[in-house]
Structures are given as C-alpha cells and as structure tokens.
Length: 130
Image 1 (cartoon, rainbow, N blue to C red):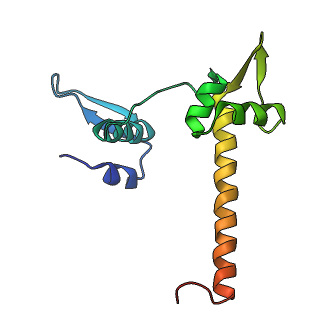
Image 2 (cartoon, rainbow, N blue to C red):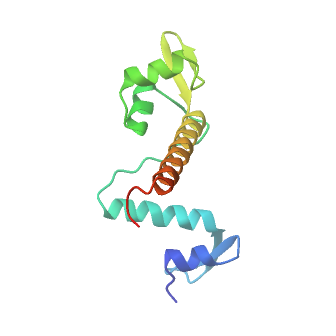
C-alpha cells in the first residue's frame, strides 16, 4: 500500500514501518524522518538545492546571510548589536545554526503578530473588504 506524506503525518504513531523492496524486510523509522524525506524529495523535484547541516554546526556570516536572504553586512550588524549570539575564531565570526534559526523564528513571530494587529485595526476602522 502506498501512503502520501499527508496520510503519514496524520498517523498517531511515532514511527513508520517501511518495506525494503529488494529484501522484503521491514524497518521502522521515526515519522519525523519520513516527513523530512518527503520535504527533501519535493524540494529536489522543484529544482531547489538541499543542504543538511547538524543543528549544532557553526556557520559563517555569509552562510547566515544566504539563509536569511539578507546582506552579510546586515548580519554583521546584528552580531555586533548582540541580537544574534556569535563567537570569533581569529578575525572570523561564527554563528551557531540553532541560534540563527531561533532568531529567524522570533522574527517571523513578530511579523505575524504585527500583521494580525494591522488586520484587526483595519477591520475596526472599516477599511478593506467586508
């Protein structure tokens, strides 16, 4: 039986059994790993590049800028202002990937809160669609 990513995601189990076609044996893998695999395959099918990096990895300011789609000088300013934690290795700055991901998550959360507030104000003032 073939399952879709959505069907697997809806399952209450923590792991998924998959059958190895060549040997006929079944192995159990974490459901999160299956979700990740589906995301990787879909991204590759769309022609997107994929990078797998351990969350405890340190990245350069250029890598951080590329991930957030901002300039490297902007990242450097965020580091110097203490917005994102970092360390220096010689004259180079290094950022923990998990710190960058946390910064990005908080930034998105702030944006969503601001957008909700603006939408509520627009409704209160009778602007927009009804």
